[in-house]
Image (cartoon, rainbow, N blue to C red):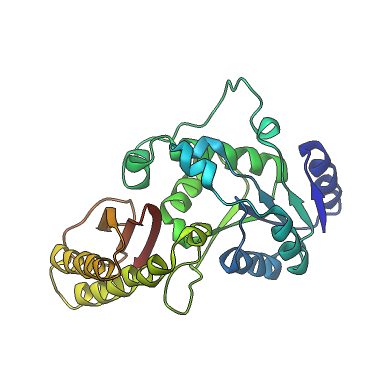
Length: 282
């Protein structure tokens, strides 16, 4: 695997592949890689000749400086994992190269940026869209792979690609989970032992809620019961629990009050200050 820390160097490598008409699969990440990332790479390898992964902790998408400062960095370990996974090129630029200062241009996400993750992380999706647009222009991939865990991010990127007529296919890959049901996330490394015992209970209780909603129960009632069960489990373990949202939504990220086809439950919660997100189809 080749590692490039300069964007011009990465572009030179990619231009050779383009000249040979080789398909390129791209997996953008912020590092601290885990099995969820590796599942995206495995999917990309089935579809493409060349695989590119980026590692860049994007400061534009953090509205909380402490969250940015505490984001795990494991570049050497990540490089070993990517090499073993058969990745052709790692792009790992410095922030000063990805976002030269002063920044005069940036993406602005409308409408969906003021609900759910956008509401609780102001400016988050502007930062995500800006860095992803830059990376797509640099890599020019045939296909780009994102995990379904970040479902609102997936929606934003797909809409951006459609509205700007980017020639890339966005592939959404099913969330990769631990045996307990907890979605793999780089933030999981910050969970205490007690918090990690509690963390899977959100997904487990939402699975039950989804079944009850399909069977005709009132969505608001069963979702509230699910939240209460997680809170009770956290209390037993002396873990501080809070949540930003747990809601039933349609495909346009609008909150809905009754069951129909194509709905999803989205959730964001904290355990001892570590913020987790997840979602599942109803």
